[in-house]
Image (cartoon, rainbow over all chains, first blue to last red; front, side, top):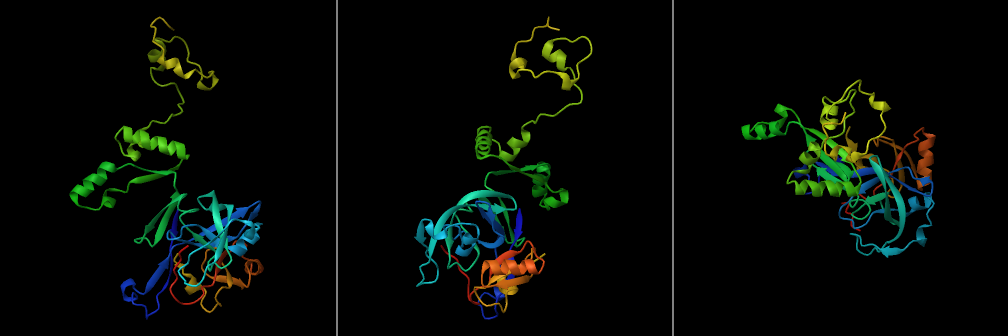
Amino acid sequence: MFELYSIGDIPHDRCWYPRSNGKTWEPVLAVELSNAGFTSKRLRGVVDSGSEVTLFQGHIGDQIGLSVRSGPSYVIRVAAPGSAPVAYFHEVQLKLPSGSVRILAGFCYELSVPALLGRHGFFEHFRVTFDPSRMGMQIEPSNAITLRVGKRKARLRARQARILPSILGNMAQLNLYVPDELAARLRAEARQANLPLSRYVAGLRTKRSHDTWPERYFEDVCGSWAGEAPIIEDLPAEPLNYLDEPRNSSKS
Amino acid sequence: MERKSDRELMKGIPPRTWVALSADESCVVATGNTYQEAVAGAHDKGEDDPVISIAPEHDGLRLFFA
């Protein structure tokens, strides 16, 4: 999921005005919050890796049925000296366009934005890549596996020839969203095979459904075959270890 | 489509005012003293999927740290 930054003008008297073409940007993301059947409207949140926790405006917590002040409370440090706002923490469901996740978030009535998406509650569940060249950020679940398949050799050739890879064609990219355990297992297997994860997963053969039996299937498995082959859909399921049994050439 | 900053979108709106933006976050459709008021105002204007924000407090630097 790619989200554009919000962009605005820098006042002329700011010392970095000439360095940034007069523009400033902010990473914002519209998220929903839900609890016990109540769902908020989309909230314009700020993606803030400098924030230890994820915070929401306290009044939003009221709207989704939370008894905000009944949660464990902690004073939060803010950049403005002299203020010591308190956040009350509750478990809620955070919804993004790319998925939802249950998080522990703080609710603070003094917060000046609807949502502050911080390290705990947001960055622990999502991989965020800030991309100044596209003035936006790529957000994907932390258990996503990104595969690059296709013209890998073309990219290497392009690099060697010192020309843009795009001239030889872009490399296709697949994003797979898999359970955490499967992601960890695939990474471990790729490391064991001494292969990049993309190449390892791309090399795994997937089962294809055939309209007909594969060529020489019965000869290779059974030794020989006589008569018409049954329709695939009519066959009962075979035990998986059948193919591992030693072949007997007298079988038919 | 470029996404405008809070300062650009909410010029002239008093700080800490709840603001309902259009679904594509391109303009303000309603404001209110509370979240509910902003959402209700958006519905009255025909926007059923507003994005809720809060008008910035002042025109200074925004720094978040929690």
